[in-house]
Length: 317
Length: 256
Image (cartoon, rainbow over all chains, first blue to last red; front, side, top):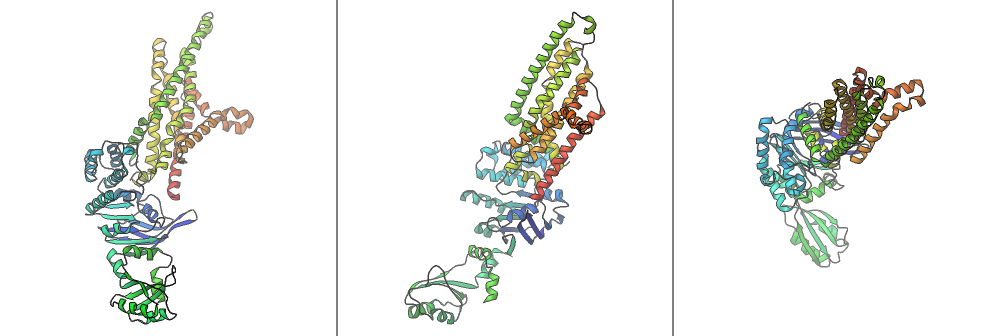
């Protein structure tokens, strides 16, 4: 439904994204994940025909975003980052304008506006001026305008940013309800959110895509290995090499923030903690701390977006 | 021109919902009213003097004297006020980020530019309508000369449209409304006075300067003469600046 082919965008001499490729199938709910400034909004703005790419092609439903721009815009509902709205208008008046601009025929416009007002829970605020609404309600207005004319593709750029937890839950619930018969691309820098809503995650960092997979796969892939954190008081010189000789230990790393803290990577299949504890007492001068670390999606994210990608680590070891 | 009507309606609402229009309308009507009164007063004195000279009095036409000065004054007031009507058109959307909505709705850039300009022209038409009562009062009490009245209003409207297209353009190049208004005002003032410089520029350049002058082309209208060259001047002026606005919008898109 959505295809990005070698998308590249330069702002003057500064490259925002480089060679971004991905495909999103019809009916998928995909999370677009990355730290601030990674190029999420740039990619989304190209897909929604806000601006053309410097290089590459973007297609939505087989239509080129540059050549068939108007047709693409017709089938996309877009909620831009920071939700720009015509703040001097009332909610209803703004939605009427948006319906007109999206080509909803005049006789259906009122019905369509009422429908999205209902879906987004704006009934009580429909006649208020947008400027006077709270951030949460403005977000709903933004979502309401995206839903006008029943778009088959929904693109939401950071839909929950700046909202309080209750509002975030409401927006998430709304997105869950909307997923039927729709392709949704949702950008965020908050992981649990994406893990909850999306079937697939595209992780982008510094303008390049670093991973594409389901949240479950991403987690399990990195959880083949376990992590143990160890602190001893006075390790003997051959302590590290003895640790490495234990069956099931893959890698031992001295942590930088203390001479006697170690991060140990182990196989999931075998519990090596008793052996490590024994060794710590024998050669480490006493065990101070020993715990296994759970890898969350957050760790994966951090691993993927830090300077050294994990693929390199694997090839080295 | 997909989406023209929706954007036009929204802009019209934006103009009439903001206090700017009412301030502009107030100033415009008060000043044009004062000018109208003063011109009439001048004609009054003149006619007393001419009463002693019936030969000369026959050649003096109330419509001609009053209308010519009135329409010229009208256009001068509008020189100051047109930038106020157009300054928010694009500058406000750039500042608040709503241009992103407009750009991603299935509305062509041309329809949006045209709709915004048309909305400001509609507001201007209402301002012009506000000056009708004075003219009608004059027409009812004297021998009405409808031709110069109509051509005068047509000229004023065309001139206004040209001013507004330039204002639309300056609004599209900045996100600051004040800057948009000042630029429009400055450019219009230059185009107003450029004709005066024909003696300095020499014969060739002077001719061009005179042709570029917005007032030069207005004079024929206020005399009641419809000259296609002057008509063409205002139409070309308007089309040029709307075209430049359109180019500015695509440049804005490409720069992102």
